[in-house]
Length: 251
Image (cartoon, rainbow, N blue to C red; front, top):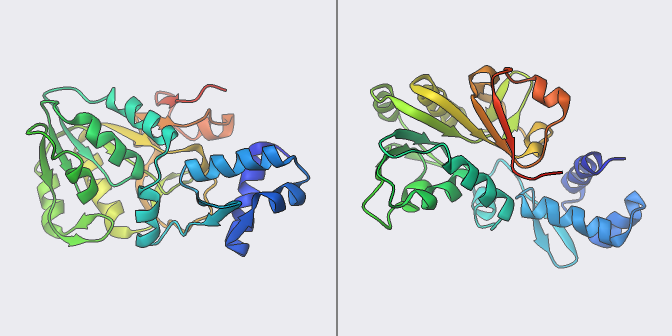
């Protein structure tokens, strides 16, 4: 069993048991304690589980409280992905930045840059309030993990974006998916008004077992994918041949 296959099995076990010890994982998969510990660190550092003493605990990817818990995870991998995304931000642009724990880490990196940012995320907006630039427009409406309203959609339809930065809860063979219909609609509308689409998503989003039924983007609309580790050939083949795929960790 490869490490990737084992990580998927650990997440399935976690969904059943809700909490697992590192020692039990080592026994279950007949691997060394150090290997099990590295698997625990990988899952918790990428926001797929919560680290607890002696093991890990399940995160419900669809709930708002658990989104807030994931939001507090200081992941060096997510920060590296955010720094890579920053390379696609240039002064003078007007960009859309969607709701995502990775994109939240991108926003503070933009402080002091002369550009305009439109977002439906309160966290993103707050992260850019330490300086007068960039100019930040927070869309108005019903507050969930994000902000949604018909007025927000109408505002987006009147703006031309250089780049739309989007996240993902799950990536299927036909597109990028999210747990909430309203969030998907905001992202689809922004993509339709953008020259370029940059998707930031860890590799595990291809095998994520959480329920995410709403498509926010077709894969052929993605110009750049920033991910953590190299994709399989099958995963790469889902995207257009012109899509730039950037893994930030070298294997």
